[in-house]
Length: 348
Image (tube, rainbow, N blue to C red; front, side):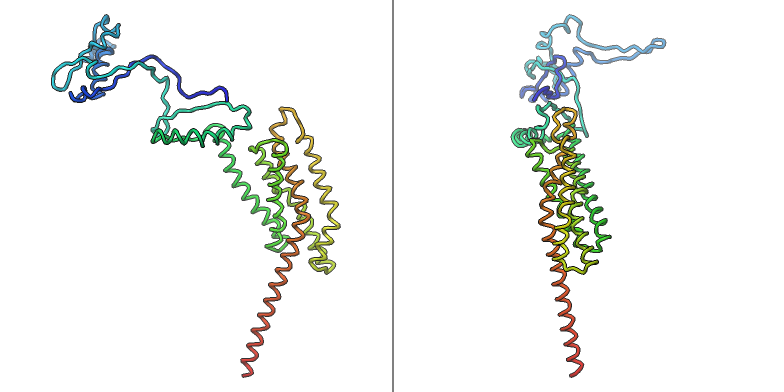
């Protein structure tokens, strides 16, 4: 980490006073002592008089020679509520320090902003996780009432991730609706969309292989991947449905024919897509590093999901159709059983 800023800027030197037990026993308070010290050196307003267009304030304070040395502070006499006078050094301790240049507050609470640059920036997430696990927990336990939050660039990332979750969920609903209408089925759109989780796994593996960390452009690529990776499974399912309608094939024969005849178009589509993204994925210039994570999500996600799709989609297609056939058989048997019972009751 570099350029660490703890949020504190040293200001002017100042003297701090703390009331001693002896001062408390004389019924002196911090505000009363502070008022008397301020009146002695800064002054206390006793009169305002109008002179022409100007207003004159009359201040009472110690003479200038007495206000120019710190020795006066030790010898300053403090008036007690009982009417007596005691030296300031007898009722308060003095500490030398520095004043704050600025005091920032949010919702009435004092806040301090700590910032630093992480080198490399791709490790910022790991650094924050380590800070939260090993540093911030100890600080919160040591200082009750202390709270913290990650702001700045990390807050922007959290906000973007929250928006992406909503966008991704809406995209999934839109894809399902657009598939369910032409298929006229509730199950087949799920078969087509089963490739999306495997595409996300492929995107993660692509980042791992190429040595990149997940970032906001990676998430953008995953959202875009959800709409692209369904193409291969959509081609298989649509071709199988068409063969069943036109050629009266069984589900096994239809999906088998779809796997054979659509294998080359599916593989070529994936190969050309990955090949088109390859120059961006393997680019080494700094200008392209912002777009490389998005290209990794798309390229490796499609590549990994395609080979899973060629195996998993036919198996799920047959399973769903078998389940439908079994459910239809059960319904027919139940219907015939009820009809037989009704006929037996009528004969009796």
